[in-house]
Length: 190
Image (cartoon, rainbow, N blue to C red; front, side):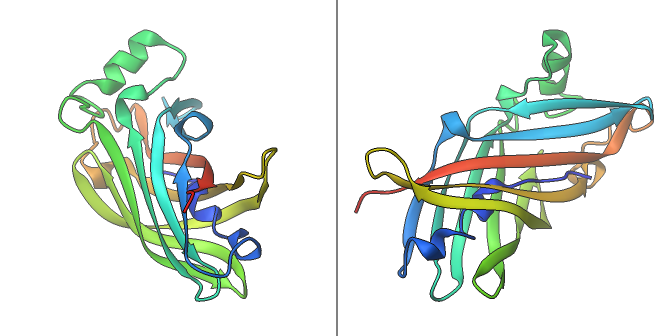
């Protein structure tokens, strides 16, 4: 299952302290990434990452509402071994020639009082869209030097790659994939 740490959703947990009206945050691709882990041969855990995570977060702390849209560049997969990365980009796995991005779009934000604790949404991977739920694990907001306001967040979820049509080598490569998104976003100037 993909353990999705979609940090973007977490961004909203602390935004209530910064803003009282709907605010728009832009995800910083250079400071955000999606990591994953999957077992192979039933024993070893392989980790990797995707660079190039982009998106927009709209959040209204007062109304406890908003939306999150993330786009992850599937062609940027990096496990630390070029031959494996090339295979993962190929037809057997991500098939990035046909599916160059992974997308997430929230459908509901879940709060415990003023704190964002979960995000329900739609994940599109390998051309298949499925509902998933993300658990918000971390969320911090504040101002950087120069008074630029932003947030950093992380969220997790678990999915099975076979549910997204990625069933090649299921006996060798695990079906459960942990995905962790760590997102940094800054408030868009108005």
